[in-house]
Length: 514
Image (cartoon, rainbow, N blue to C red; front, side):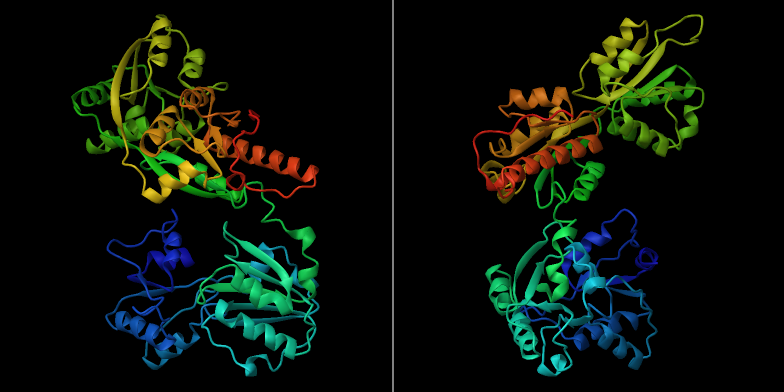
């Protein structure tokens, strides 16, 4: 329902800019021309009052626009928008609430606190920066207290909790960035709570979740989120201009904080005539096979088809091969089922090894259409030619080195602030080193396959992880396995587990290939 509501919106108003990540989700499709507005603060940095936020909602709604107020968590429990709703009622504006999962219940779950063992729960929301003793007058000295508050009122909350009869030594847990891959927990006591939170260096207006009471003491066995193998790892993902989605998604499931850096821009060929001639030949039945060696090659062909008003039906009667699972899935998404996908090595060499030889008695045509990058190797063409096929090798797209990333990213790469770098091709290795320099020696290097690993080594990078299967998911899984083994090694020695970026070591970890 929330996705559909956003899709129907004429205007979107957010409390903070970080909510824009929700709007970038593939399931969300905003109307053309809808630009989200952020109403977090006045120009002087002071938070807007609910009445001021409501005025902006009314201004847009009175124009006949469908306005969505996008908030974190649950609208009434977390976001303090009940006052805005009241203003809408007075202004004669209809509204609808789409309930969300409150951070008051979600964050405890992310830190492994089971509220069913809390001996009673009292929820408090003080996200607007105001807190009075009247709010704490009914607090019980027993059970678990869960508070969502700004940093600048944590001291008042701790004092009020002790005034209600809670012991100063009672367990307290502060959660910063709850539910995100940057989640940090501070376990302390009630009397030391305010000092511990302020020691984290957060701004007074930052939000923190505080839990006080018996449920905090029972958390050790349930810390599922922060125990993920890549939790908190800052992972650099060099990518082409518009790819890396499956890899980034998989890394996040392991708790990583992936940061994408464009290293390659995919551009059309300088001269389109050769591609146009090949597309006409494909439609006219001049080819027996089409071999796709990348998603980019498929995308280039598909874009050409759309320019001519064609679709996947033009492949009727053709045999199609894909270099690997990722390309095969992209074909299936277009409605084409490939006849060949290598079951072994998913590469040009692997595809050539499983390709059938030309048989004049069975194959009416001996031509193969091979759309590819301008810098692709001759491996597949040579392999198919050796099998008796006539290969029409066409440049479908060019790969151009991207502009250097911002200076802070380049500095982070060189000084070891990234915990790992995942390379999905030899070209991403060459281009990242070319535009940003070599990663620091402490950074874990992961490669999608042997050829990419060899390119890493040619550039002076020692490879720690090689994916057992050359796919984005396989690469993320292999890196997670490496991290889990590394963690287990530290724990077996009774040592704390530092992230690679915290070691600044010169020696590298052992290579992992499975």
